[in-house]
Length: 297
Image (cartoon, rainbow, N blue to C red; front, side):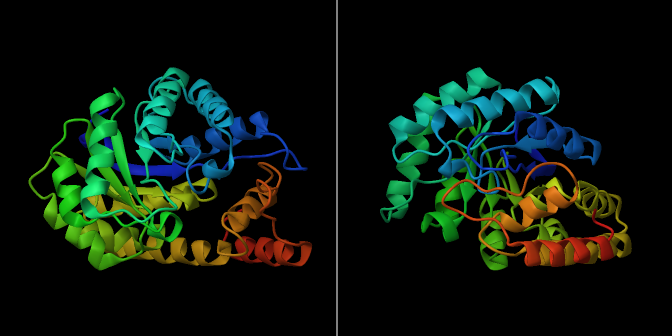
């Protein structure tokens, strides 16, 4: 997979679970993959933050990736997210994910301990040198407590095995700094903030990996297609609709709102991986009503 092939609207795939939350609902997972592909996503990114990957075991992340590959077929890029505290663990899991069908991986820095800029660069460089799978850097400091400095991203962008970055910082100035730092590299910058898709693309982002694409994949595609065709009025209209859906689903512990929305759409149960809890009945009812008003379900 190349940096050029990374452009587009991709889904940060949720992980459907059994109603008791104790096992993966692989039938629901297949329904969700088919739903997102029908809505126009280009790539599928399972077991990331929206997919509750860090709360799943390594074996379960492998099995989910294998199911996604089986349902999506060979032509749809599959980009799972390993979860590892060390470079050695990341390298090992990436090998397993490639065997399960991954085309590339979405790799965040290790969490728990702070990291200097040099340590961040050394970590990703070590993984990139030792794995065959292309790497998409994952900047999500709200979860990892580690932010990838723009100069470090620019240095890593020169590595042939590092093809892009997903920025979920919700910091537009940071996004701009990365875009300007990698301006001459064969490297794609994606936003993880679907509420910022339109402005992100206007300053050079290549698209998004979005949680909203689980529920309303067509809206992200409408924004993307309108921007690429130069119809900014249509892009702005679709962005407003997408913004309203995202705001409605920001309820409870992430990704409780998205799980509740998928339950309302008949895709899967609203259960989250323990110890996280889904929305209570009253909040689920309110969300369902709001999504109906927005014609999102």
